Length: 427
Ligand SMILES: Cc1cc2nc3c(=O)[nH]c(=O)nc-3n(C[C@H](O)[C@H](O)[C@H](O)COP(=O)(O)OP(=O)(O)OC[C@H]3O[C@@H](n4cnc5c(N)ncnc54)[C@H](O)[C@@H]3O)c2cc1C
Image (cartoon, rainbow, N blue to C red; front, side):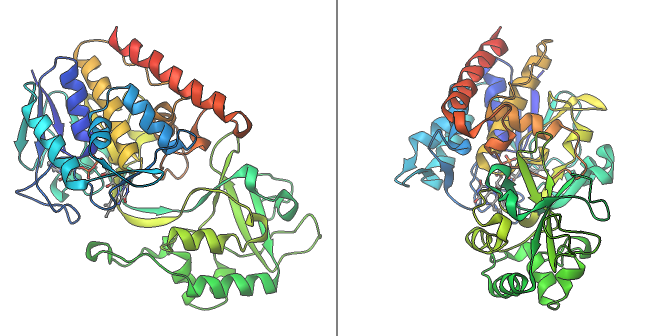
């Protein structure tokens, strides 16, 4: 019997292709052109809804390395992206129409893939891969919510920026929790009144991302963008994410005028997020303004903050590391809905989920890709329990044993581990 894949985006196409490569028939359901999401405009499979850039080509950049891993793994999305690329400097930029038209033709011509243009409103029986992305249709979202529980399905990202810990100026910050100077849960970045005033003025005037119509929603009070909070008055941040109460600067023995708290994002402490700093500022402005925080003057941002519409499951609670729903192993989740962010990340989580579903169908065991690879690091991230699980794009902070000073070695490890993993999935 055919495996069903719901969603003909980047992840669904990649999953369907990988399943077909294993000789298993696939029914690929795509609701367009009968029903459109608020962002898709064409009837083509794997439409790029916004930028036509698949980010860096450079292997010393995690985005570049992830793409190289996907090439090794025989990704159809990467092959067509390379074939339809146009000049774009250091980034892999594609001719968006040729890209999705070519993919559509290849998938429709694949004898093992049957493309069905239909909205799926209920979760079908049999082995099914759900790859309906950040704008999953309402009816299917309802069904996913029913099976996962409403607490495990989110409709918005409220993402704080993440900083590479090696680039934080430790002389200008100190460990300690509110009312617990001895605890080391937070890195506190103090600001004097003058520094706060400079920061505040820049924040208020900073350029923001233009919202699309469907994104013009009122924010939840609990996760307001910092610039919106700041607009409410100069004191607001001092009672919110920059409040100094209960914090004593170990360098001065005084309570600072304002404090920004950084919280560990991973066990090893390679990444810290800026607590409560979800924002709609442009990336360039985030880079400029957050560097006004003295401890972050030379910070390297592994992820910028954002808030946007995004349907995603709480993967650590809901799926196993073989992409299977914990309460029904016939159901797989793939792509951005699993809590990754971006075209290539979603493709990677489509490819690996497709391999997992085909091995399951063949009665074989799926071993997750190694955490030393970008593909494995993403899967590890989405399946590792977290207090406040938030979508993530690829960065070296996620890669196991990554060390900036031995980057070449880490890149080689990632690629060789992927070659070995590919062979293991073929036996
Ligand atoms: C407004 C916006 C802008 C973005 N900009 C960028 C960017 O510039 N760069 C970047 O890297 N990423 C960007 N992203 C994220 C990017 O779109 C995703 O990472 C990627 O497309 C996710 O791939 P996917 O296959 O998981 O989902 P999608 O590519 O969205 O594919 C899901 C598919 O499922 C279909 N579908 C949904 N519900 C059903 C249903 N019930 N039945 C059948 N079919 C269904 C949809 O029509 C769609 O074709 C953006 C996202 C949005 C929403």
